[in-house]
Length: 373
Image (cartoon, rainbow, N blue to C red; front, side, top):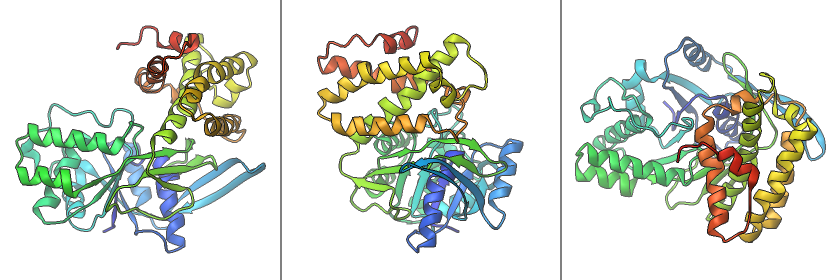
């Protein structure tokens, strides 16, 4: 059993968190190995779980530009040493969470924090996994509490503002709704360490059955919390007491840029296989997104007093969008498009108003037309 328990087996986690831990293990700077939990039970998922359980790890190919030079290398990720399937292996997962786990990492997708109506407190202590991720996590923490397992660090990586705080609040609400005892609620509230974090890396393609293709740029920003345990030490991990500036830059420059391109792809009926690079190579589309960044986004950062850092980050974003090695498909970016617009575009427009800026933001407002509020 391993000290790191990971919910999610996405290509992003494979090429970011798992790769970080693998690189740190080679230097003796990691907490230990990773057990991944697969929540779905499709044939593809089963193949992925089987691949994770094979010795020798899986490949991550890093391709792009770094410091003015081309990067094209393949690495073996060996940090994932155990893979379990929630519907099949829930008793094993519960045992690991209750005993040896010291850190729980998650990246469960855009709708990962949604609850499932079929989940109920009768599932606690049972060998049947709850349906939703929050209920799964609550059941595991409850088992740990009953076993006297002590504090644990929770490091969610979902693209949700203050993701650790949000997940903590969600679990506290769920625990109260299920009328769980005050001691356990106090354990969630006071003993567990809920860490807000931000991950930033473009992972464009999967390698089957396990593995991924990713850009060289990578960043994991972690908000410092008393008593937290990190899965590893790594040069591309930043521990800070101010997470918000990093979040804003990624959300309103990188993520908003992706969603704006996906909006044009959908509205204009552009080619099914179009990539970010192909879109950036179209003079008309490039001029539109450049205008969005210049006229509708950067003035907000200027008003916040963050213009210099934001301009530097934006230049990195442009270089990443122009990466000739990555096939980052707009069809993939356009998944859960309405929810992404609600998270990536709507708050920026609202922020401009809160700051009293006289910004028309016509392109962003057009993208929001018809979005249910």
